[in-house]
Image 1 (tube, rainbow over the protein chains, first blue to last red):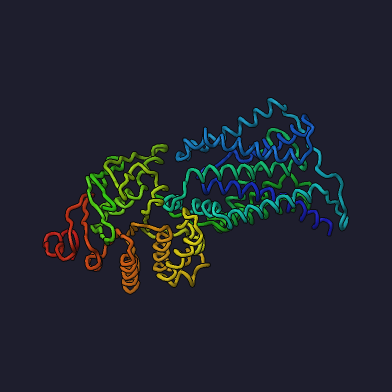
Image 2 (cartoon, rainbow over the protein chains, first blue to last red):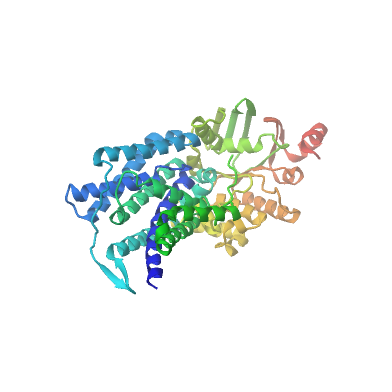
Length: 291
Length: 249
């Protein structure tokens, strides 16, 4: 019983973080047509930002979160405007550029904070026990925050005019343009929102994770796997895929603790199996070729 | 003239798709543009609505070939060939594109609302929606259905309805009858006639020459990017060479 609960808690947390990352990655890919390899690097920057603000400036964690998210949004938009927008139609160059950006972030963080493992204190300390399982308040908080942000995002996407513009641009940017939607402005706004979400994911997960300059690499692999598993361009797919991957990881860790190091391999194996059966992913959409 | 195209040429790489075209549409007219496949009809509509210029900007930043654009386009007394595509709708010029292109994963009502994206007056949007529903009752029935699941005819109605939501002065429609059963084609043409009668100027690209020539006030025949004939339907049909060579009648 307790092992099931353990799996549920960890699966939900991992899944929610992957969902936030994968959904925001999908948004950028869909609207701006950018494969943003640097996506999880922004997640790392936000995490380091929280560390700096709480540790060196003595702020409490909540304002630190706001600072982290706002800073990553600004950073994301500036980088988009300066480095990515000019080469947006050149898919290969975008891949190389975003990869380079991620590496620059990694090296800058190493320079300032060294490569050593750091940690950030919990927002709320303590835990409660149900069925013999310790559930930390911080875990609960991370979960609620992720759920809340996803609900807000869905309301934004499906109930507001700007959300409508975003979704239509993702589907057919030429027709969106025809209808009076300024496609490049929408791409810029999307970049800001998506990087903000990645930063937010970093901000809520940092007390549960180890802070180090390579912390972007594993989530990057998992995020890409989630997006491919769910179907490129499908938000629903990203959401469902994220929890499949999250729960798979949790199950491997708790059901065979000696094999915990295999958690990512098993998750990726599931992705491969799904792709063998459904090459377009779980909720993949057929992209009509643009002219 | 509401729309005036003067000496427009378009090159995609070395291929000249539009060759020194001059044409015009007057307020209240229903003008047709016909011609064989690959004549450049769609490209001409895309040029008028700013999509070719937009594509040109994109290709500049990519490794794809180059697009070259020449000539002047005037709409409602103002030059629009330098205006970005997303600003052209505001002036009352819109296109119901080739292959309909609805936003397939979105509902019918969402599609229509994107048509009204630039309108801010709620009452105006409601009024337009009411008009579109009146013209195409089937869209009202299916307003919450995902548009990708509509039939071809319904998708065409949606494409035209979406364009009508933007308060157009000039509505360009690109091949509305393609892929439709004869009965549906007749219905679509009937609706276009109704739109034209309601006071909206229409520029229609079509393959089905015999029907279109009966409806249109004036016609242009395009071949290999050039306008080779212009006139009323029955006049054009009297020209034996034109009929056999270009119109396939």
